[in-house]
Image (cartoon, rainbow, N blue to C red; front, side, top):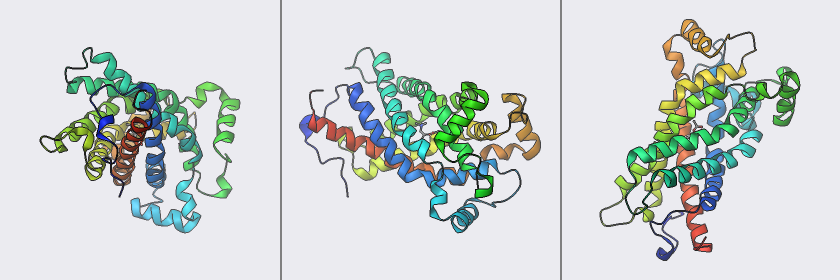
Length: 303
Ligand SMILES: CC(=O)O[C@H](CC(=O)[O-])C[N+](C)(C)C
């Protein structure tokens, strides 16, 4: 079992983490997040965007996808996140670190929960530049269920077709909904993680020496709370980004149409798939981040 305690105490302190280390360790966290979470993300998007009842729930969608398309059906659309999630999470942890620096003028005074929340929100703004087009392409690829419906052969083909057909606006379709989804939830994400880390640290011990299982627990719960806040906007975003241009007259129309056609519970479509994915994916992400940070501190303590 990997332990986050394995590196020397000497490299641990409360001094600020350099932006470069946050960026690199965040990238490692992103890779871990993707490997642990993508199969359930595919199920989530399929459940959220089905126009008639094809899948009765998470397990039904998993079973049908694997029997029709094989295990790789669950990894459809992974090209974009693979290229996008590493810089996205790198930017996320970088933005969070930067936000903390900007808000906490005196590093010797403990950072407040409000400052942590605002720093997390700032990181959510940073990541939208990458997340909005990435999600547009990923969702379009994920809803292609059979070879006969294949409009796009892969992420690059999809990006090029969107750009050729309607320009950069089409590639960035859904940016406002991505901001609505990610800015407040990202604040909750980091606030929960930091709060739980402190809460789970035994008295008299340092938060930097938290056991692997506690880092996993804090990260997993942070991921679940993040999604509890983000899911309604995520449902609207996935529907908007995968719809033909004529289906909705604007963002408000996405909400009105969804409420009219499917009722309020549609805003929490795919909840069990989301929660099933959120815990392991984000537990893996934060553990990857913490281990990478310790390695970087060990290799280059003075950076
Ligand atoms: C909404 C979202 O994408 O959440 C990210 C983690 C995940 O489960 O994919 C985390 N966050 C955007 C908060 C960095």
